Image (cartoon, rainbow, N blue to C red; front, side, top):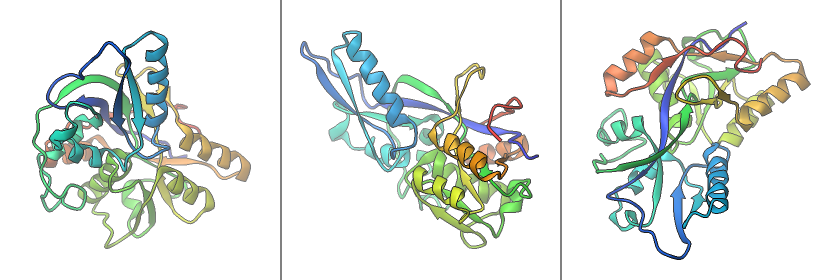
Length: 267
């Protein structure tokens, strides 16, 4: 049985550029740029919005679907949005944004984004993009995926799409030239794995800073249901601490290596 042994995590946060949101006596709408539907944050921010309204907050968060956090970081460079918008982002995206336009990142981030920002609140810690799910349990390591069909998130998505590409290429030598790498939405890539038209796909898992409670979002629950219905075992392919260190050293990032307790993920 192959279980995820190690997951590299990035802290997800909402960042506001150049100062706090302007408040007013009346309820003020504040758009929050997030990610494609199914990424998890659109749902959690809607819950937060409702909780804030119930508690009498003067600000109404308005979650907005976007192509992802790589899109958001470029929007953070748009001064016209600094006073009115919040931006979903991650610590590792801020780090990578300074390297935009480099050979390794120009596909996802054509230009560097070097901006001041203020961290307002944290959402959680997410592991997607640093491990993959599969119904082919003969695939034991990331290196086994060379030449295989791999379904990832959009190029505009950080952990679902870009981080997975960085780990596959710079830790394992797996690229679009030697493997069938597809970029699509969370719903599409999950369905591809269920339908058997891909060998492995990104799937999400979240946790909090103490790494005690874990969140299993919709896509992994879909895979769990498909596994039970088909009788196919759901397995996971993780990354090693050495490979996390390798990526961190190359890009100056702060991905964390975490070993999930047995039984955390279904399968």
